[in-house]
Length: 108
Image 1: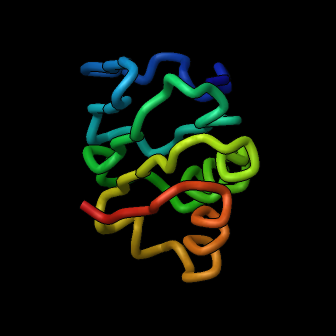
Image 2 (image 1 turned 90 degrees about the horizontal axis):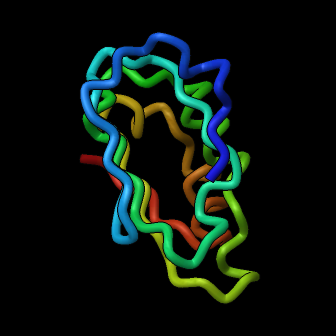
């Protein structure tokens, strides 16, 4: 997974856990996050962003626009969970497009 370092200066992450089964980001004040090609490896797991309660629409849109195409690659489906507030900013078309790439978009 590539992370745009521009958005990871002094963000004060409380905790960032990475393992094969899931990636959970804890920091309720983080408003911007840029992840590119998420899901590009078979070992990556679900992405839990529900603790980012004020994550902006642009960050969610960037993530969805830059997802790796797991469906075409034949990889298993992953779940990306947003806070209810962030999830509410996404359109049905954006959620459907992510599903076609092999992702389930969920609300916490």
